Image (cartoon, rainbow, N blue to C red; front, side, top):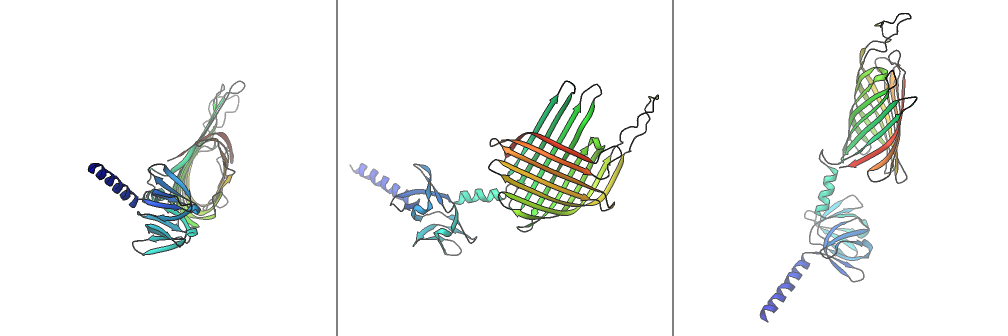
Length: 370
């Protein structure tokens, strides 16, 4: 009998000890829940319990809260108080270690996080270089046979690494179309790639540095490298719409190969060794001007548009322009349908090459987040 009484006493003592070190929430209907407060958003509070797991409670249904462990409580005025939380007279009291007890009206509470949730949130604001990436890949392919024999492959990739104060963007595209008739030829061959780093100076202004590369076989462009730097302005920065305005300067280095060979005059058939244009290397400074727009259309579609203008500072009157417009419609979490339109304009291409390259691609989009 004595041993049973000792066991009963030990169980009661352990139960009371556990309750004493657990967070407690008392509801307005008199129910009391014990566990660990995980997080809250001013409307609901998530309490982790041993018996029922995570329980979501309406904040308006709570009469009292008492926690033994520290919580990170964010208020409407932008301040955050850290410490054990209690309620009294309809107010939240946070017993901070440095500022004493901080009182706030219940309706002024915007966020509540425990240490683990706060650590995860802080990590999301400052992810390492291998974390925090979002982006996707576009794939389009077509084949024709019969009177024509062509193969077209369009690929695109982009990745964005966003942190609280900066952003790194990577991209690459490739469009290749081959004509496989009796006299094979290249119908289109365009490759682009680059990266850009943005650093916020204040909520509206940012500085940027970029490196962009392009090769275009039909314009005899072996490689164009553009190194830019400047300032940007977040003209619109909201959840459905963003609009950035860019201005800066760049250094451009471009290399062209020889153009098309001039055909022989009949009845001659031997190669002439004469070309419509000859290889040249250009180096010059230019302005970088642009705008970038992104807009959510409904729940599943995002439209993006950008325009960049590069006036030559050494040969005034010469310039380049790039316009892009695209949409991505989500089919599932990782799969979507994409359409892309682009126009690349060069005011002084080599002789025999056109000034405009107009592109349209459509196909699948595969998105990712890491």
